[in-house]
Each structure stands twice: as structure tokens, then as C-alpha cells.
Length: 343
Image (cartoon, rainbow, N blue to C red; front, side, top):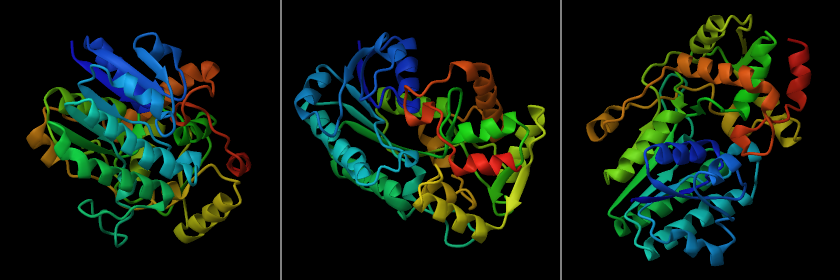
């Protein structure tokens, strides 16, 4: 039986990969600093920090053929220097032990934050060049370089760069959106919202990570939906279909970005620079190169995945706790809670 190691196994992406692998009949070793009983009950779980617990890391690799590396600190954590420790150094250690233990395939979950923003308001982001945004983006960029530097040590190696991820159970920044929509509040957005903006469904990331591993497919895979419109139109369409009175409320771009920057520096907002510097630009991938290598095809449109995630949120609201990863937990809205009151 093929054995897979999944790092960040209690996170939104990692936990979904574990569940799918188990459903497919694969043996799974899972690693995270947080234990999720739903994951530890179906896999061999190790509670450890990949950037610190070096003595324990090697034992988790016994018999592992495929590695799905998802462990990372995300922008909402505003982790400062810890971005480097976990996202860069942690990745180095996982690569090192993967090589020592003759892992066949290494799948690395990267980020679209490595590309930054487009050069002009009307153009799309250039995803042939690195231009990372903020400390998080820089850390994910450097982590990706570590993978590329060592890819020849594996039979195959895949790098997956998702657009913002949505799906059942996705909270974090989207929990703020869903909370406001539930209460029929206006939804402020940066600028007019006429920018084409692509999301990625969790199932698509899971499928790409697993397909590239078990079929030994190498490459860089930019993953998102192929059914998207402008941010404003997709959000309003989703609000209408879930019978919410919420509608998008455009805010002057410069004023909004400046205000969010100040609130960020004063620690009065949960949003990081990656959030308020990226959501007002055109940002979408061309997926044709993926289709040439993979059987995978996107399953959901932007609107469909927003609706699915919102429906899950409403149905599970009473049972949501903060014992899991950032993207699977509620977050404190801080000053945004005051803004919500007036909308």
C-alpha cells in the first residue's frame, strides 16, 4: 500500500487531502502542531513543529512514498519572523528528510502571493515572474525556491499555487464575509470591483496534489476555477442566490487601502497587506497548461463555491470553535465590527 505524508494535516487544505487519501484507500501519516481528532482517528498522527522538532521528524518518514507539504503560517496570523521559521526553514527540513528517506514524489502547496500585483490596473498579474507581496509572500517565494533547488532529488515534484481557497468549512477571512452576509449588511470592497478575480475550490487543490503524486507528474500548477467574472458581479450573484439583502459597496481604492494599512499597523484589523493589496486587482490564471498534463478539471464556479461555503457556515454556525487552524476558525473582526454596525 502506498504511504503518504501530509504536513499541516489539521489545516484546511491538509485535512482535506488526508480525508481524500483515506477514502481512496491509501495509508496516511499526518503531521501538525494542532491535533484534530477527525484527522488523528483516520491516520497515523504526529504532533510536532516541523521547524523545531528535528529529532522527531525523521521517524514520521518511515516507508513514506509521497509527501504533500502544506504546513505554513498564513497571512491572517501576521506572524512576522515566524513566517521565515515555518514557511522557509520548515520547508527546508521537510525537503531534507524527504531526500534522506528516498521519497518518490514531493508535492508543495505554494501561494499566488508569490506573484504580487499586476503592473497596471487594467492588466492581469504576470505569473511568469516572481514579485511577492509582504512578508508572507516573500516567505512562500523563498520556500518555493527551496523546492525548485531540490526537485532533481525526487522522481517527480509538483508545486501548486492556489488562488484564494473556498469550500465547505472555509472560515478565516471568509468568516467575516459570511457573518456580514448573514446579517444582510452591505459588503465594502476596495475600488469599483470590476477586476476579474478567480477563486480556487478546496476539492481542486486536493485532486491536483493527489494526481501529481500518484502519477509522478512534475511541474508548476497554477490552480483556480475557469468560471469567474468580476469580483463585484460574482459576489452580488452569490448574495442574490442565497436570498441575502447584502450587496457590494465600492469604496475609493486609495482611501480604502490607506485606511486598512493604518488599521493593520495599529493591529485594529485582522486583514493583512496581502488581503488589501490584492483583492482590487485583476488576478486570474490561464489553466490550459494544466489541462495538457492533468486529467483534473475545475468543478465549481466562483459563485457556486461561495454559496457552498456560506451554506456550510450557516448550518454549522453553532458548532464552530477556534480549536483548529486559522482558515478553519472564527477570527476577531476588531475595528471591522464597528464598521459592520453602521452598514
